[in-house]
Image 1 (tube, protein in one colour):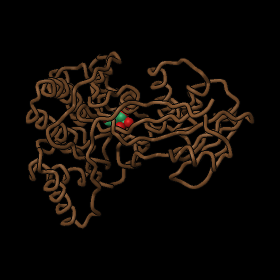
Image 2 (cartoon, protein in one colour):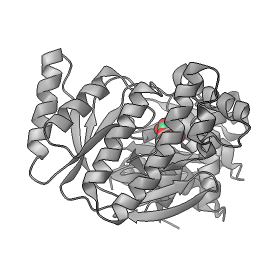
Image 3 (cartoon, protein in one colour):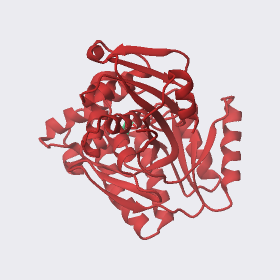
Image 4 (cartoon, helix red, strand yellow):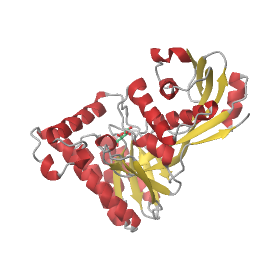
Length: 371
Ligand code: GLA
């Protein structure tokens, strides 16, 4: 494994473990995790790897195969904040609060970053798996999810929900994962579409640390407070219509209608009704575009072109403001859909998007290399 041989070369030591965790695409249920709703993501086959060993000098030393440079910080001084991509690694070590002298960690991130495919959660979860194994800790996967979310929310400063880390830890190959954020329950839902789930990475910029995501989140909190519900996803449409501020009402309208779509989408998947599943995907996109207002022209055009070329459904996936769209493409139409999206982008003079065929991969794992 490349990350193991590179670790030996860079640290002049054997790695003890390699943790790895997948990226994800969310099939439906967007912006519902922090609203006590439901989401149904799949884990991707693409993963991030973290080779690691304990060190006895009290330092956390981090390198990546994707970026130059080395970050070195005393574990005791992690509170002083590490910046940049290594903050995700430092944040997990900080949040886990496990006793160890120090760690050497080499990252091989094979989940494309900036594509809205959750490369950051993959990195956090790979590191969490590695560090748990290194320290012999018995904390549960659910606790690792919580630590990774704390790392992202309180250390990196991105106020995201827990969907990405939950699917990275609990995915089952060949299945989507229905996550109910009202009670933390998860269950697999068989995912075996006829044809392909095509991921269209628009390459439009995407950064959740920016204020837009946090703004959406606080609109939802305000709406829930005004309605007197614990979670906005539990509100009814009648209640939503009582909200006084029109923008807040639109945001809440997305949340409540999206929650209903996830319930229908799970039923459609279980009964193999792919046309209905596609219809729900497309309706989800319209709601994210018009009510939640987190789409961008690049995502809208990808969705439109894919549908015109015969996709059963298409939508943006993830937080929005760039990143990727997904299209449910019937057998034999993959090339036609890709061509249609490329042509649409060319006519706008936009850089061509990247395509990936996504299938449902497995959860985070850890492997012992020595000792
Ligand atoms: C990002 C966040 C998730 C979730 C999605 C929107 O991916 O990391 O927690 O809120 O946006 O569904």
